[in-house]
Length: 265
Ligand SMILES: [Mg+2]
Image (cartoon, rainbow, N blue to C red; front, side, top):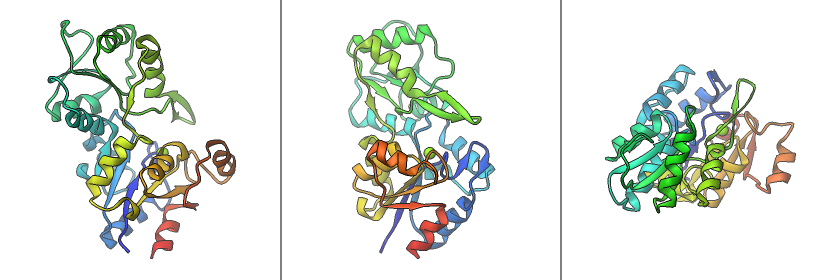
């Protein structure tokens, strides 16, 4: 049987700068077998080049073209839905700005002269401030579609948590009274682009990750096979409680990535 893989990054292949045991071995196994795969990340802040460089730093071979970020998927969605013109108000970091430029859009900030923008696209922005909120809300209330790269409201950070794009989105949604179009996992939008990029049927694709709510829910909703690894958000101690709370059940639960590889042969 053919297998393809959509792989989560943080908590699945590395923790921050620390490699996760068996991750590099798993990627070597995929390459030896010739199984197609894609690194799929909800992180909108990095460019594919930066994502690949980070993977290489943790000992995992990676190329930018093997990466799909939520920023890239947001731009694919803009293109697919025929944004009215090329100007996009963005609230985000380098990964989002670069993806917009690469997609032929003109990323503008809250300082841009007043005029119509095709859309408001928002990701994580560690320099978020009131002026950006004001600009986003003005354009969204004026009819511009509001696109959110990823819904994660908290992110693991130095053993603690930091607010993610979803927490910024809560303020924009509140003031604009408009729910965003969500692109990243578990949204079917990024899953559809990821599946298309692999060129396999969803039933041939394993979605692999440490997060039941995003990786596993997104994979299952897209008709993919699902494998939860107990190396990140989910671990051996909390997996039963997490499954009960989310109502999400993966097809496989693996203590590490090579366990999945060995089971597939
Ligand atoms: Mg993860």
